[in-house]
Amino acid sequence: RPQAFPYDHLFKLLMIGDAAVGKSSMLIRFTDDAFDEHIQSTIGVDFKVKHLELNSKRIKLTVWDTAGQERFRTLTSSYYRGAQGVVMVYDVTRRDSFDNLDHWLKEIQLYSPNSGEGVVKLLVGNKIDLPEMGGEHERQVDRDEAEEWAREHGMLFLEASAKTKAGIQESFMEVVYKILEDP
Ligand code: GDP
Image 1 (cartoon, helix red, strand yellow):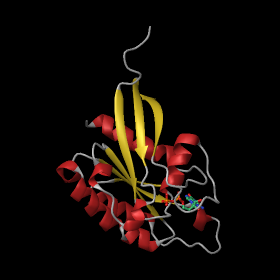
Image 2 (cartoon, rainbow, N blue to C red):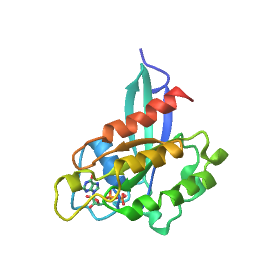
Image 3 (tube, rainbow, N blue to C red):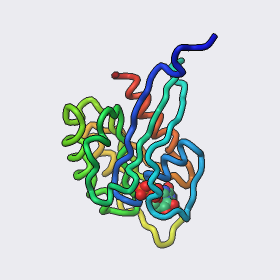
Image 4 (cartoon, protein in one colour):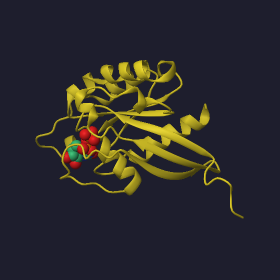
């Protein structure tokens, strides 16, 4: 029997964080299960769509990427409008990308309706494959420190790698679960 709507819920998620931390790569890994080491920093996809089924609910997920605008350190309020979830990303081998999280949190509070109160927020430390391989890239942000920071700010937390797939599926699913939990 044809159904009136192809989904039960339509959710909008946003990717934010410093340039080159791997936001686009995480999104492409999640939606296309692909990874390209040689992409230019910030490919700049606008958004991608993924259909899921969770708890017998069909979900249409649109995930928005900054398309390089984060370089100017400011995304407009239209980017934040209507989002139920935000995935905030830093690079575990770049301390500055972690220190800038305060800036990104302020942006959410400034631009989201209700100062971002009703928005599900997830912090992701990406590129955990780099320090594991040894060599030039050392870890600059401890897992414990990041987890504590996320807890202080009422955020979920995970570490991930768009390259190895570790934590990628889990990241997006955590946010969707949480949105479904408290609509
Ligand atoms: P964005 O600017 O935050 O969207 O970052 P990109 O997705 O454009 O990624 C920036 C660079 O980091 C690219 O060269 C990616 O190939 C690389 N990259 C992204 N995620 C990972 C990861 O998990 N591990 C490794 N080793 N490199 C990554």
